[in-house]
Every structure is written in C-alpha cells, then in structure tokens.
Length: 200
Image (cartoon, rainbow, N blue to C red; front, side):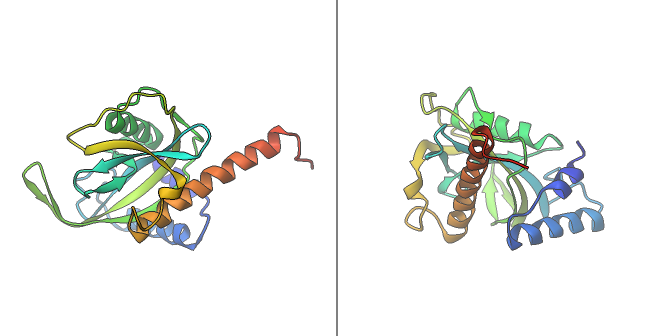
C-alpha cells in the first residue's frame, strides 16, 4: 500500500493526532524531499513498536543510549514503505526477542516527536523531527532479552503503573498511556465481537 494512503486512512483519535497527521501530509505535499530517508534532515518518518505482553499488562522497554531514558523500540524506515515490517524488525534488533507479532496491522498512533541535537557515531546530528508511525506489538515474557549495545544499555518489562512522571517525562507519559489505552480499546472491541454481543 502506498505510504501516503496509509497515513490518510489512519483515523485520528484526538485533536493531537488530527493535527499531526495534517501537518505530515502538508509537509509531504509542499516539500520535494523524500521523508522516508533520514537524509531529509529537518523531518523524516520513523516506525515504532509498543511491545506488550499477551495480557496487555506489561510493556517491553529499552534504555535508550542517546536519550538516556527508557523508551519504546523503533527506528528510521530508510526508504521502506512497509512501516509494520520496520517496527517488527527494530523490535527484534533492539530487544533480542525472536517472536513478535502485530496486535493489529493498523497504524495505532501518528505523532510528531522532537529530537534534540546529539552526537551519533562521532558525527553531530542536528535537532529535527520524527514523523512517528506506531504499532502495538505482542511478545512473550518468556523470550530471552538481549541488550543491543549500539542502541541501548538495558531491556526490561514495565508494569503499567510505571508509566508516570517518576519514570518518564510528561510527553512520554502522554504517548505511552495513549498507546496502552488504544491496546485496551482494540482488545475490548475484539471481545465484544467474539462474544456475539454485536448486532445490527
């Protein structure tokens, strides 16, 4: 599917997602740069996975080297228009898990996220924006976790009560709680249909 169509077909759940989606689509239209590539230095698309366990009461997080904080997994799409594939690949590379699947193949969140200037591999990367496409992924807590030292310094499962300002900044708390809420909404809708509660 064309990546622009994927973004257009995403249904925003709130005003933040509505505004961010609009701005991303405007940016694609007005600027000739390829936002699928990080060579688009002001803004480019990233794909992230919010990895939850099967019971949706824990989240697998990594301690990010550059941000020096706990974070979800994800990365640059580097020209790949299959954003879900990118999210799954990054999840495996950053945590060491072997088996991870999409909770839903639909995009669950679109966000414009700021990245502050930093050094990466002895090169300065100027401040820019990540045009974030997000998915909810599912993995087992029995999976062996492996730290990817190029990307992070730790990998661990977080219970849902940890997603507060004691562990994350305000913007991350908003983002992660939004994703937790989205996962529970999707699960409740599935149970509703599975139990035969829906009728025309």
